[in-house]
Image (cartoon, rainbow, N blue to C red; front, side):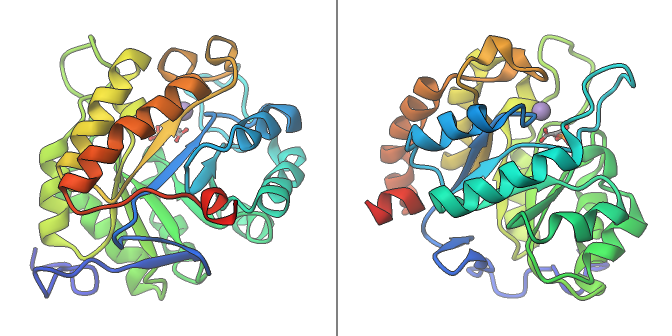
Length: 279
Ligand code: PEP
Ligand code: MN
């Protein structure tokens, strides 16, 4: 892709390994698997997930939520900041959370390890530029109807404004079939790995919108060469305040990760989490 200067692949075998914390990276041999609820609902909810000792490398959860309806739960907001911090300090789990606006960047920086740009903001160019000014990793999700080129150029905005620590995430694109929430574009995952040197994650939760489709597509994503996964899980999935239908239980999450092990080995990847390394 000739328009991308900084994120374009120059060496066919090279993926940039991005440090999330001193002991967790993405883009290397070990897969980066992020799990957690769509929305952070309470300290107890997050404690339950952290205490499940899932072999994940990161915990996700939004406190600022982009919702289709203005009447739907908008996230805990600043009240959730202490919960993010507690997860990192008490459990040694890196935290990934969405930033929706420029003014939230400074608020989130002391509390999170990775700032996520959601689909709806993939081409919010002022937000992309502002994230170029920080050095923490940015997880950039593909826009709802963004082409691969638009996705790559959104990453180029962040890189060209000074932050090379970018992780891409394919989360499904809009199509004509309402059977699934979106269509998981695994072809784009392979293409992105060929076009850019950035690590690429797959989010089978938002891609499908149905919990029964999450594990098979997670396995397909790893087989296709993804560098990790972002998956919505919850102690009581049906009770999730947002995205309940696509959210899996903690037991299902553990089983899913176990089922990935032989697939990871077949593509010369490994799976171990910071909590597992500690214990
Ligand atoms: C999310 O990760 O909770 C989210 C809102 O995802 P997306 O931006 O991909 O819709
Ligand atoms: Mn969600």
